[in-house]
Image (tube, rainbow, N blue to C red; front, side, top):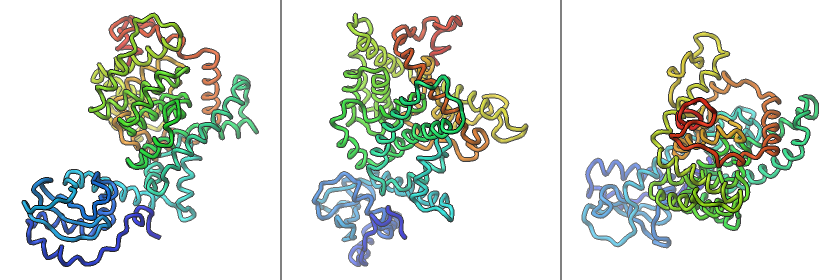
Length: 473
């Protein structure tokens, strides 16, 4: 059975004799490119579906060189090849520029590569639905190969991951609330072990589904936004609500993928939020949008700058909003200073993760300098730091530029790394996360946020170092 992506753009194209006869109007190199389009009905369908051209135009000119002078390949809206226009030949058709064609072709190649991975990932006893189930059942052990394989089905999934993520997030919150009162005395056995495993799978499924939703194409992302217009919080706060550093960073990544059109939602969430999670998620989302889209940086800065820390705030919520906004704004002012420390922290994580491996193992590193930079970045992005520990607020801020611009799969370790470093899940992991929520209820993280020192001031931990060289990293 052909893949959904192939079926969606599989257009029956007759032999376009007129088009083929007119190829003598272009150079040999241009002829080869035109023929590559002619032979690839799937790619042409994708280009026509995603290119920004006037709706309703019966014919479209695909530029194979200069977007104004041509030459052009003329196709119908359905993808049938009509003719080839040489350079300078007059026409009044809407044009898809060559640069846009190349960008869309790159996406087609990426989708095909993901399909190949998906086919290799399927075991003989599995179907595609079973592959998707990995998102819901593998928790923190979901591998890069798993995520790429599932993302190959993105055209078929549509709004599914986003809607499912919202539902699972609600269920995770309800289960967690019911378990928090007993968190301090939970023992890992019997029914409590099963409940902890269920909670773990739910919490991580929220993150995976959010990432899968963010990996969708522009049309689907716009559908997400249409369905969340009336929501008073940001579209990603459900992921941040899982309260690990990687969850906040994944939310920020999705915000960056949404782009400029979602700025009003994050602006409103920051202005109206009554909880530090909502505020910090919104501020990070705005920062991520500015970092990924240079054209949005000015607007993001204006929003964040409107929160003046010198103002006498009437409520703790107003003070918290100001702190969150100014923390992100400070990051945007010092982006270049933050990247290297985050990578160094990721390298240290990798050394710690692999220290139990035998000497000579390729994933055991004696020093941080031995760790490849790409692996260090994933270690930083995937680390589940307790966001009730304010040290991790600075860590998340420093990692934000990397997260905002990263490909989705960089949040996931390759399979051989997961197997070597982490092994099987243990219920103690989920118990530890549950207990962090219990601590947060007793002592909200926002309580000390206003006392965060300036970057060049002494760190509040008493080390004698400047904040930017200590916990500020």
